[in-house]
Length: 512
Image (cartoon, rainbow, N blue to C red; front, top):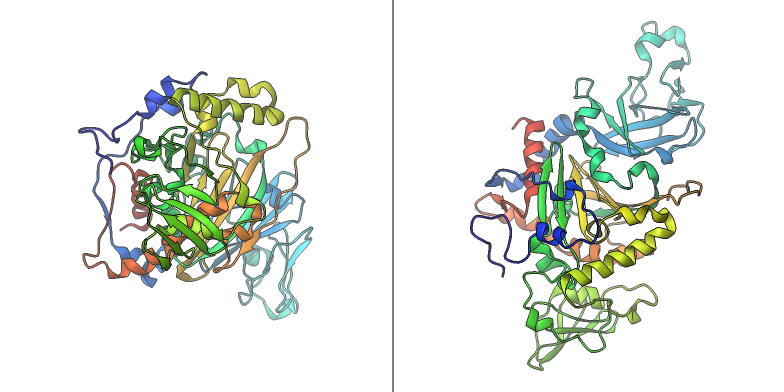
């Protein structure tokens, strides 16, 4: 594995600053900015991921007090359009009350608590409780109480819907149920500078997939907050990503990771991958970058694995041995090669390129630059190679992850109802609106149930296979942490900076 240079926060190999020095275009100062967290250790009790008491504490001290993304403005484009935002056991209505005015209210009738809406609605003129018929204008003003004479204490002054604070950033609508919370602008800090040159105001929601998972929302989110897991979970990325060369920083309520692409992982022996794999295919014939074993798709759920010494074995997509002398295989590559594939993917050629790092990164950037030129015009000529090539991903506390520069990914993680051991993983692709073109309508949510495959959402493209690799681990993390005898989970000082930052902020909110 990779040794760490004494006195530094990075592995052996090229640093990110050294990669930036190779850029063919001007590099924005934000990419060179260093804002690391102080060293740890950061240790948490595993019960925070499954305890009912801790879950209830999060509801009271986090979800009722924090700024949180509820929806996108495009989800409620017209006056009267309403979105139901559910978080844990709480429910809120977000409604457009004017062309440029959005309000939010608790989703509960003030008579006996019945939810006013159970799903999104369009062009509403009022909120009408289906139970007893109480009604409110969309601005929250009490409109009607049947048999008003029987409620002498009820009036517009006392029983209009209580407003929930609303903030707007980048086209997204945030709410905060706490009237005493910090101002929204203070919560965001100087976030805008991180999302140039394509701010989210210039983007639209092209894809929205929501997948139910059998794990705590923090378990799921933390799986997407670091590159440390790439060496074991995503071996297909090791010949193109400097996972252990990643750079981590924190800024107020936000954290950032930058994982460089277009170079070999420091974990990989260059001699092992020096010779191209004959007949390589992206999803059907690949070589494990660490072991050198070749994984070949025979059919769905059937994978032949051939070791460097010639031994071979047949496995299913969960790496269960079926036959042959070789009796052990990597579950991630078995699923990658033998799992679900959309039609036509089996013959997809391997696009991996070789050559010196500067040339690889320059070629990748130029290809991306020409691709985006069709959408953004000559604006792309002012953008650095790094902004086109590298994986730059942020987390805004508590539960969203907007990716930077030209990567359209945007994640949200939230509890699934009132269950501390279930969550919802949402993936949105926020694409730029082409210059001179009208803004497209937002994608509708494509729901995937617990046992559905990410490949059931073909709009995710190849990322569906990557997500499948990620979630293989999660139910086993959820179960395994209950058996940790020491009752301690410890995070890496640097490589898990974003997770450490998250727990620092969470602890501050919970007051523990």
